[in-house]
Image (cartoon, helix red, strand yellow):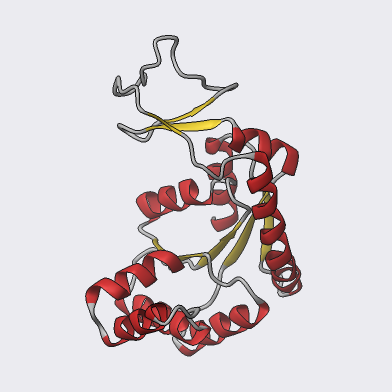
Length: 214
């Protein structure tokens, strides 16, 4: 069993790599947002707490998120867990470490998908997806066909995220770095951090992560 944290700014490709790890290694991706939505829907005791907090317009506490993570870990995962969106603060990092130790587990790697900000902005602002099948395109590296049809399914439904613009992305990057910089130092000091080039090809990033995990 391998337990890892994937760190990287918006658009670095964490979701793509997490999906590959779940498919190839039987790992389970623990996304904070997904866990909160699932908890609300299933009506469990923890889910009722989440629904109540959100209904009051308050932020979900670290204690609740740790409780959700505890429940998921207790369900088990043959390949281990990928922590996505948590921890975001040093306090959360401490809490996660304590939880894993309590459950007889450990954190095996923290992988930073490092990027060049200017290159990342160019990557994100030029991307679009097919509304029919989800195929990803880019204005420069993989443009839509001249007839405007998706080469995968033939749809002409071109979708672009409203926040995939330069100003919005720079704001999201700044927010990421403000929150994440302390975590990089924290896990580096523990000897857990490995940085890889997040702007390499999807296959190269996948291979780099595989080398880290062994």
